[in-house]
Length: 279
Image (tube, rainbow, N blue to C red; front, side):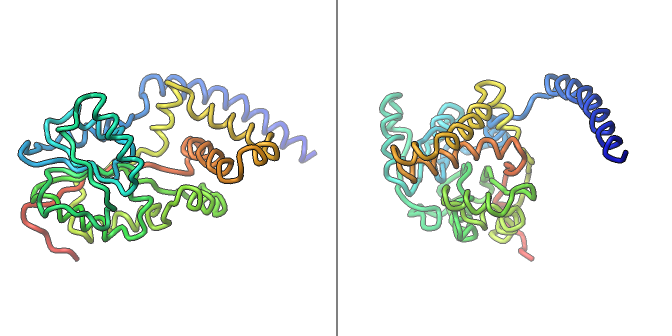
């Protein structure tokens, strides 16, 4: 008898869930998810002195370096520890004849060979998650900023929804530093370095929702997970464990964002003209 009551309860809730999903469809059409463009908008709220440069700290293959070039008149320094990334960016710059607008520097954020107060802004998108010594990297960013300069950060945090085993696998496969996935540790490092948090936005999985709406990225990733697991023995034989693990991790990454296991947060940090006391 109790079991029947439970079944009835489940199906009654299922019918109500259909109404909930119809409401969600209507609301999501009216309130679309935020996009990565908000990071450029954050930077655009600041009056950037064109005499000073913008630092793309951890530029990767330069995808966002090019967007900065299109949006702002400042000269840009693109810094990354991986030579292959800078090589890809160099080819992109030649393609658009933008070589003269960008300086390429191979170095880590923890040890930047750059001049004090050289930059009006620092752009740091999805990089801190790879850095164990966050304080050292942020201290370098603070040092190279001019007084009154700003730093835009897209931070990646794990949530309570991710299982310890899942988190450990992500850390291993993406070379994540556990410290960089901690909101408390990262925000404490911002303040401890001397930055003031001018603005912050909890993005959650909205970027993933946006990409799903235009390219079905997460649906494709979920299908890839299913296929990787279905063909695992043969895929391992043909491509090796490293390639298999990398493909599985990347597919999980997109899905985890949609499931709320990974959350993005955007920050606008300010280096005040007069340093405030750090307590």
